[in-house]
Image 1 (tube, rainbow, N blue to C red):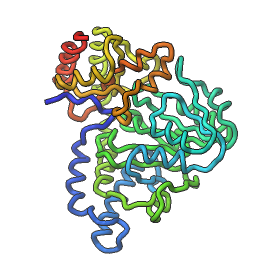
Image 2: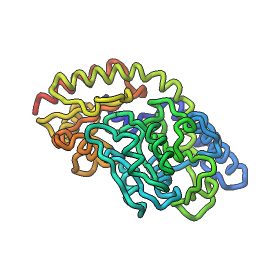
Image 3: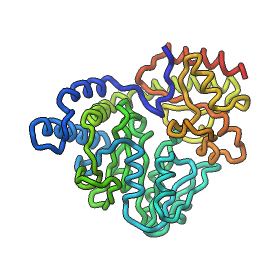
Image 4: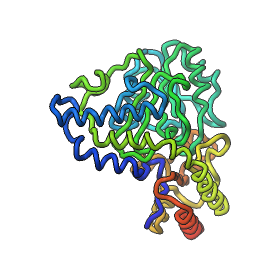
Length: 365
């Protein structure tokens, strides 16, 4: 059986999500907006999911907008929050933030990441009044934990609003939306053991949000369209299992360290290890390989990994995030291998099998 080490792209379903979806398929297939019994049953599932998401992130259910995924949540926030000032982001963002920022029609300022995350004073100066800061909390490629709390304070000092992409933070770090202080925070189900096709946007109470999808009044007029209650029930169940998931991160870190030591012993240079990281990922570059070629060679041997963000995996382009982080070393972006992991579907034996495959394949270059 292949060893799956691409959890930053999508996690296997956790048992709680799988069981919840199986049960929901019997009662949650109807339109939650319908007034009859089947509609009310689907609505109950929907609201149960909303409560579970809210409880997991320290929010009130009324402030949670359910979406069809993390990308939609990021797009909705960047394009829907009010303001005409500049959108400020970093060169290492996931396309869900970066592409939305470019499409916003507002002035765009992209902060360099070479040498590390920009300081709060750089962020404040770039924003100006009525600006929008749109940033990820945890790097999808390297797992670096970015100083989002400091950036939020800088944005507040500048009179700007803040969108945080927390899709890689949830389930890997404790999340308290009120404590963070942002105006909108995006989450995704398929990063925490839930199904793909479900996500959420937390919106600060009283914050205006222009809908991007029109046609219905769902989600209090903030997101039109019939929601998929079954998928969202799985998301809610995964949120309910987050405490156990966070408790497993120490074990996940030990697996990451074992893999990382192997990569370094084989000549790999670890990316993004200069500061704090989440436990679930390592990124390393090999001068003798091109990332996609190495990923294909590993796949043949039974190790499933990636060269970078899965949303860009069909594009023959070196990692923009690593290019931004190491502009003087372009080979790092061209030859990156990302191994990402979690508690679902892995054990010590699987990690040792992955180590053996790496030791067979990488020296072939």
